[in-house]
Length: 371
Image (cartoon, rainbow, N blue to C red):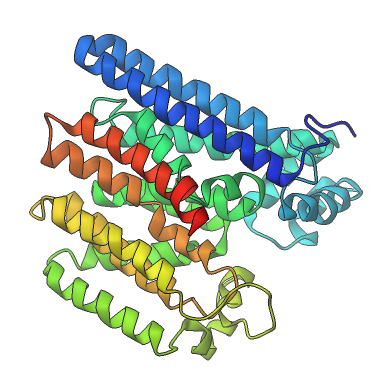
């Protein structure tokens, strides 16, 4: 089977992605900021079109990758694709694999083509187009902050590329979780339930952000100070060695993804208390509280969600691949900063969003890799 860039390694792909992101962050931000001050109509058109260009390139780059790009790509090719295409009846997919329903549905629709590139391309399209639709929705099509810059913020997270080529099912769930957060905050509970259900069908660990969303929702009347105290207590317990791996009943509930929280085997992944991740999340929490309008309901809801999801992340330090749980806290960083800038600094919001986008990219792709 032929693939584009078939001789490339994962490291090659990451370098290409990093430079591509760099070009869009620096030049895209300069273009939309310049047009914002000169011509609002042209700004809105450019904000959308440049974003579409970025999404299209990412879909092509990651959707047509070879099986050597990303550990899970290789695993998905041999465990899902090859076995799935050998089944006599496509409907056997739903009983043979016993994995997440949404992923089974994708396989059911795509595997009859017997082409792995179509398989990876379909997943890339679903993930990136869903994320595009969410960002456009959250920014009101560019009227409430640049949709381009917000998407680039999300893309600047150090897990975005991983979702493209490695943690595929986990990544598929993320845009649906974001829609769930958005509609829960908007009090549109039917749509929130629908999108969170879709997210759960993508990956069982979505039970975690669902619990955090409900905690933030039902804790709306509680003062933020209580959440800060809980955050500090959560760090203390994590430092003392507490984690969900010590909660035995988790091994008997939920899907395989949730049961993995009780993992006690050997691994090369770094486990144990992670002060680097604690400092990372705490830095952004400090910025949100310092800059945000704490009388704004959306700001408070997102901060409270961030607190809950960060604590859950800290309490998973003793299991492998805890960063897959950490992503559920990191996904709201671009949301919070975009919302805070638009509401707290309306006249200079795009200026500050531009600086933060550049800073966020620099932190995750330039500073942290060398620390």
